Length: 471
Image: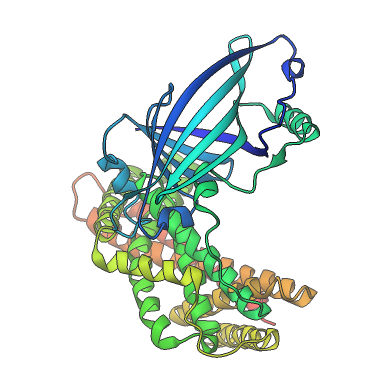
């Protein structure tokens, strides 16, 4: 498989549109013109699950991009993953899409034939942009559609050119396309929930954002990337919404999902904990003088924790092909189009539920500080997260300074108590390493003891900072 970043603009034009000249937009530029006929066969589930996430899978014939192409949304454009030509969707692409397609079969959903006039704008050997004037004919379920569009794909460092081309096309009568892809144009817009209640919309938007992040994490995990932290945070936010705003939801439907999300987040947490500990110890040891680091401490910590991390990551991979995990994704996909709502909500009720979460978080923090109990501090941290996420959810509804202040306040508590929890976990790990070192030839527990003492100091400092955050 081969991946590349694709940055493009699409423009709607009619049959009478006259393409303006653009050879003067680049000094010392050359334009290569060519024509070709393309056939693109698009695949998705029968329920269009890929399209709902902005994912495009197609088999392309007819130009130098012949082969299978998977297009995935990215912050800077789209990532295009290419494989060689085959009759059916390649197994490697099907595996990448297992979560997004919810384990369903991929089927042909559309065939597009395009007569393309292509203009490649170059400066010396550098490809600045590729402009395609496309006449498109689409076949979907015995229906035929036809339209014309302009598609521009940019090379690197083409920001100024994109602005100039946009002005030139707009002046000639082109309009920015309403469709993110030719397939979206052919199939039409995905249905969206018809909701006019502001409170309900706020909850649905927030929940959908978290679900989208979970699906994005699924694809990135299958691509071998590391979205562990971002995926866990999205799961936390989703579970927090179920807890704090549960009176709006049908808990008989949401509570089982909450438990299943907790299960998967726990698997991700085993990986994340090792990542945090490896980085934490590596940074400290790198700053200490050699006389304080006796024996192969850095290598022992990194090797053992990395081995545990790989085993935990393998458990995540195994879970992601299970029916249990795919059932979670199937339910979340349903929630994207309609939450299991039980009762009516109002902005006033959301405000009241969020304030209740804030008061609970403050009470837990005060009780934990007074008792000095580490487990209670951990519970206070979880409550602070829920209060912070509740403030995030109602931010579009409540522009008051108090909402922003609450969000920042509980974020600080979360950070401070997170440092405390990381120190508690690190202390347990160091105790285990020290016991092993004491019975292993060539090793001793001296440096582990120093690290342990440092972690206890960090934990105590975090307790003091948390005490200052009481309000």
